[in-house]
Length: 396
Ligand SMILES: [Zn+2]
Ligand SMILES: [Zn+2]
Image 1 (cartoon, rainbow, N blue to C red):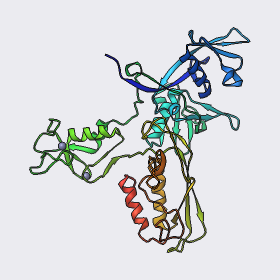
Image 2: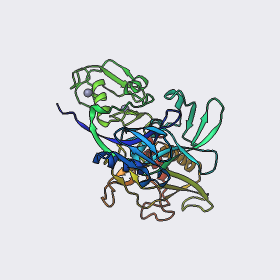
Image 3: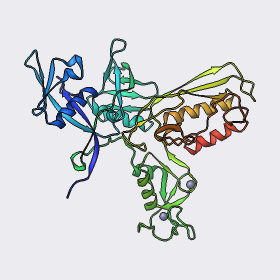
Image 4: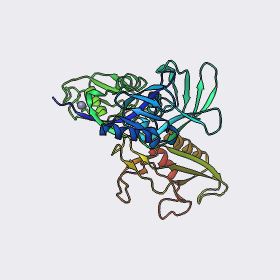
């Protein structure tokens, strides 16, 4: 039987003297991949990267050769999932000892860092997965701390060209997700309890009575610990699997969030400053928020993985009054930004244009004045409404 094909990212890598595999740049990989698909034997790397003009790769023997010496090193053609930084046009790097010197992590380390960052976590202990790397990464201040010495280095997630995609039989490449990923069983253990079904109450997913088995045949009933809504365990499992996310549970009856909901907002920057002028309706300073997102390539969580996403009207500038409640909303918005919930990728609600970065149901005031448009002040109910919108995303 023919195996199903799956899309993967190709990265050619070379082995350094410490036996670690280092990725070639996307440009060199494009060159190698073209030569590989044409069945060429050998490629001069200088065609893609002038710094490598002394080197060529012998494709059939997977060796990199040097013009000026006999030194040969091993080369490999490696696959990564489209959700890896290589597939998203991103690269994780640590700062070297001189200014503007940045070094890329090995690709498998980058995959781990990207996954944890995508989940909205604040820190990751890299040594749990890679024992030879005694580092703790902190995503809040973008630093890497060496556990053995306490030495701190800066860290960054830079944009670069994406690596090429190719299709391989599904059984040829099985990506092992990092063990840090939350599993559905962990969520069930933390946020639900098995209960006896109440007579006369229906499952709010399948609508069968809870005293009857679910449409999947099993009759185990669970209750969400906070809101106490009861559902068939099988129905909840099927619902979670169909949405393909296991970072959090959402009650199908009242929409309460259990766990950390993380969105699909592309990378970018959020900054704030204080303006010494009052908004209409307030007599205090104003908080100005600036969101910046640059164009990039869609990941597997987006509507069209591998295609570019477009940005319109960035940086987007928004305003809050600097009252106690306004500053609380700012802290919630910062949390929502870290969890990648402020923007999403999809069709524009106003123009219908596909694959654009759009607001994600958390309303912002993009004008100082202008009550008629609804985008400005005065609007006495705004802070309460946006607080409720954030709560619906589990940010409170
Ligand atoms: Zn059910
Ligand atoms: Zn509920």
